[in-house]
Structures are given as structure tokens and as C-alpha cells.
Length: 266
Ligand code: ADP
Ligand code: MG
Image (cartoon, rainbow, N blue to C red):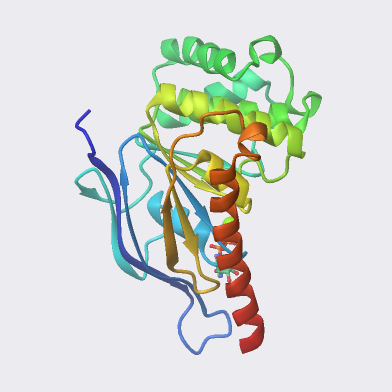
């Protein structure tokens, strides 16, 4: 791995749904640029509807941006890149009729991993997320946190260099969420993956991110980039660290100001 090699370049990406004048016309994302160094975790935060999911979909090649481009390595993204990019969503999208391990193996089947490698890789990733004993359970037999562990195992088992995570812990209770954050930091370092992580939680963004990008309200664009040192303590304890508290307050003030000015403009 080259030091500071850029894994993903987002260049002046704007996206609109529909055409101007149509009733469904929405400006979803405005002139957004960012570079992400290989192996870094970046958090994207901003008001609901500001285009965070749209940006992930553009990076993942599921949407072609109206203007601008995304490069993964030295290639422009022109469609899905399942060998290079894995997704994880808030709704874990596990098949309810398949067991946990079958779900993990299905991800690899779709990605074209040879059959003989699927079982050992699935076992290894379930072990990593602490679900080895639940491999043969069905998603409906697991708690919300365990289902997200399974979804994380599925994403990790794909061994892609890039993982796109769209509010993956948004539906979890606060305690489970903190455990998942700690687990993610541990596994992401081990996987040396480049991660885009969308969240609504400022604390989560500051805990997880090497960089936090704050988006304006719709149509979203980056209004602040904050570089954060790696966490030195588990999330619950970081919440009490003065530097951590300052960073969270700075982002909260900025977001409150944006909400206030949006309301004033209504
Ligand atoms: P976020 O993830 O930040 O909440 P999204 O990227 O989902 O925001 O959406 C940005 C804007 O684009 C919103 O106004 C949303 O309603 C709109 N939008 C998202 N997907 C579509 C779509 N497929 N068709 C039309 N409008 C969409
Ligand atoms: Mg979204």
C-alpha cells in the first residue's frame, strides 16, 4: 500500500432527479468534491434529505451523477463495482428465509467468489463480528444489533477495498450502537478498508471518522471538513473527553445555524 494513496476521488459531483420544470425535479446534491485516502474512514453528516445517500449511490456506481465524476483508484466509476465496493444499509437487507451464514455466503455468490472460498470466509467474518454461534439462526431469531453484525459480516466477507455504510447503526438502541461503533473501528483497521459512513449522530461521526464532512441542507454540499485524531478510548468514555466534546459542539453549532437559516428562509 502506498502512503496517502487516494482511494476515491469525488470531483464536482452534482445530482438532480428529474428535469427542471417537472414536478418530480429535485436538486439532491451540489458540486461536491472530496478525496479519501486509502484505509481512511470518512463520516458524512448533514440534515435529512441533503443528498448523503445520493452521494453514496454515485460512489457505488448505482447512480450516474448529473455533473462531475467519481474515480476509484485511477478509474472513473461508470457502474457498480462489486469486486471493489461493498454496501451496508440501515435496514440490514438479510433474506429472512436464509440462515445467517447463508446470507453471508449469498453476498459472495453474487460477487462471484469461488464456491470453495465462501464457507471459510463466511465463518471467518462471522467469528470476527462475534456471531459464530449464530451461523445457523435465521435473521428473525436475532436482535437488531445481531442482525447488523450479520450485515457487517456479509460486507466484510466480500473483502472489498471500499465499504459504503448508510446509517448502519441508525436503528439500534444507544448501548448496542456504542458496541457496534467499537467493533467497527476494530474490524475496519484489520480490513484496511476505505469506509464512507453516513450518520445522523454527531458523536458517532466524531468517534468513527478520520475526517468528518458536514453537508448543508438540500441541495447538499460540503460546508465543513474536520480532521479527527483516532479514538483513544471506547465510545462511552470518549463522550466525556474535553476535546471530543468541543468537536461535537462545533459541529452541532454549525448544524443548528444551518437549520435556523433554512427555517428563516422558508
Ligand atoms: P439523505 O440521504 O441525505 O437523507 P437523499 O440522498 O436520500 O438524502 O435524498 C436527497 C434528495 O433527493 C431528497 O430530497 C430526496 O427526496 C431526493 N431523492 C432521493 N432519491 C430520489 C429518487 N430516486 N427520485 C427522486 N428524488 C429522490
Ligand atoms: Mg439517506
